[in-house]
Amino acid sequence: MPPKIRELISQLESAGFTNHGGKGSYRKFRHKNGVNIVISGKAGADAKHYQVREVNSALKKVTKNA
View 1 (cartoon, rainbow, N blue to C red):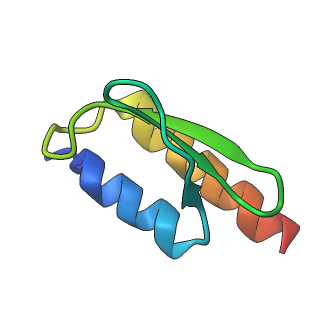
View 2 (view 1 turned 90 degrees about the vertical axis):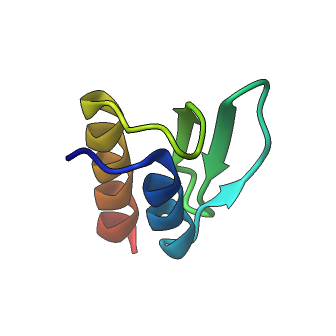
């Protein structure tokens, strides 16, 4: 079963990303290291496979730069 959008957001926030708003169901997250990611969809919706892949990639970039 795929994770929910809220779970991806929780992972990003726990890694130090901050929400910088967005338009509609889009949310922009930034990290102090300069890594940006945009997540779309309602919080209760299932995440798409490409969203999970993008979040994992962003988390790797943050941990690699730390």
